[in-house]
Amino acid sequence: MNVGMIFVACVLYFMLMYTTIRASLRYDAMVQATDAYIACGEDAALIREGSDFLTDQVRLYVVTLDPGCVEEYFSEVYTARRREKALDRLQEYQVSEGVSSHLQVALENSNRLMEREIYAMALTAKAQGQDLSKFPDVGAVELAASDLALAPEEMMERARELVFGKEYQAAKGEITEGITEFLEAILSDTRRLQEGSTWELRKIMKEQNVLLSILFVETILTFILITRLIIKPLHIYINNIKQEKMLEITGSYEFRYLALTYNDIYEVNAANEDMLRYKAEHDPLTGLINRGAFEQVQQALKKKSTPIALLIVDVDKFKQVNDGYGHEMGDLILKKVAKLLAETFRTSDYPARIGGDEFAVIATEVTADMEDIITRKIIAINYALKNPVDGLPKVSLSVGGAFSEKGYCDDLYKKADLALYEVKEHGRCGCRFYHEELSQ
Image (cartoon, rainbow, N blue to C red):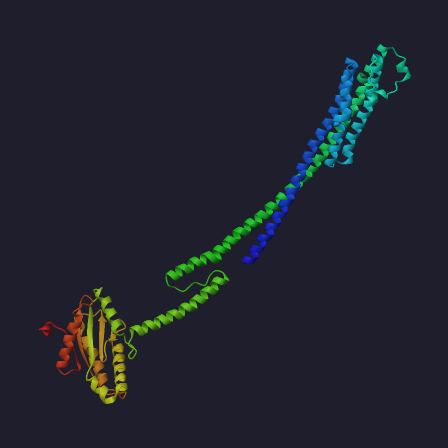
């Protein structure tokens, strides 16, 4: 699932990068179209300015007769060259031929108008007797015979008519019209390009929104999966470990496998711990709790106010049995005694082997008025030991007991031991409990 999520995220990332690049290219195209439109407007303005400048200079000359105006005129034509430079710049922006043709026509009309203006300057210079030979274009003009036949005043009037008349104004209008058509064509192309780019950008942005939405959903899904399959199982496992419990089988495959493995190890360790604890707390021969575990029971009962009875049990003349029949027979006798104690007393009581042939029992929830009940239990055990049906030698038990109304106390063992001593002094094979007269 992680590999799949990463793959989907990578695909979405590259698709987003691709759409971003497309959007960037479309944006650049829009910027270039806008820059081209602005530059074309500036170029059109240059052609208009250049043409108007020529018109202003030729009109000034025929009115003021200042040769400096002629010099300014040809400086614009051969040095400044604003109209030609404007056309050259259009090539940099790759303007279509249909669009640039309008500006080309305007320039051609302006050049044709120049012929009329130069003719007017030559006619004015002839009428005023000025020498304009340093301007080859003016000197090369051949005046019409009809104009040469005119008087100087009439020549001046004719020159003014050439640059101020209706025909001149119509020619200027054609130049202006060509420039206007050029600007309208440029504006139309720019709008068309911008509309196409805008539509494409909107389409790209919709694609990006869809991709981002998918990426967002995938991110949320990934978060949910991580939470459900990883984070939540981790919290559960931590709590299980703190509570020393087996792990729940939950989460992703890896966590389930981990939980199964951990639980197997946990069960093995628990079994080993139980076995080790059992060995540590129980006598290996008889299976009863040993002296160490019995002392722990005593310490635990010190903290409780439960009424209890402590019994100290000795196997009578066990040494003689051991010496006469051997240690193996002695071990069988000890096992038999342990079994009878465990079967006779309740599961809530604590029979224990605390020495070689010495046993003890702590009976819980027992008061002094139950002395006869315990005595009868010991009598039953002794009867079974003295009347064996298993082929084992006859033996008996001497039992001394003491009661406590408030749990285990330090002198309880001493009292039970005094009672046991009393049994042994009176012939063994019996059970006696501590009373005040025993201490005296």
